[in-house]
Amino acid sequence: QVQLVESGGGQVQPGGSVRLSCVASRTRFSIKAMGWYRQYPGKQRELVAIITTNGTPDYADSVKGRFTISRDNAENTVYLQMSSLRPEDSAVYYCYVRTLFTYWGQGTQVTVSS
Image 1: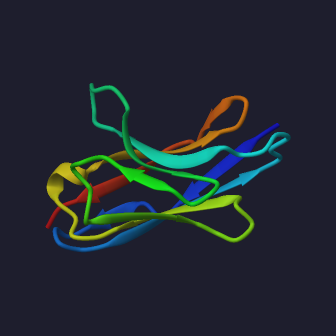
Image 2: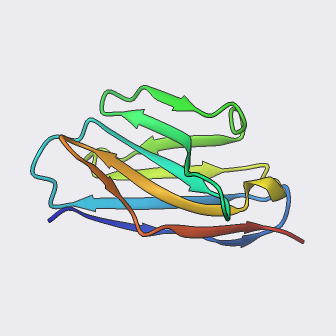
Image 3: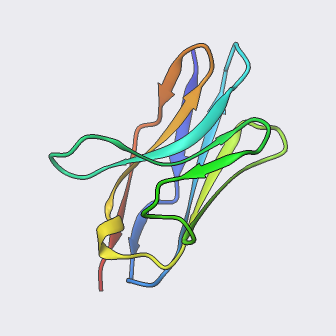
């Protein structure tokens, strides 16, 4: 059974930084892409950033230039470096992994406030 474990969420001041991590294990098929989505209360989950196994990243317009997605050499861990954080970045962030199927992490809360 595929397992995704997220870490790194918490409270940060506006303009600050936080780094999210997600470790995927027991993937029986090759990973095609890993990424991060976020969800505001009462809203649909939306794409933040995604990276393919060949290293090609893509970002939502709202985070371009502020967030950086990356993965480790084993291609089983994805990171999201979040900088210049704004209050509107406050949300639950979900790790996303796509193989033949789609898997989601449990979500981690990021709160940007003074």
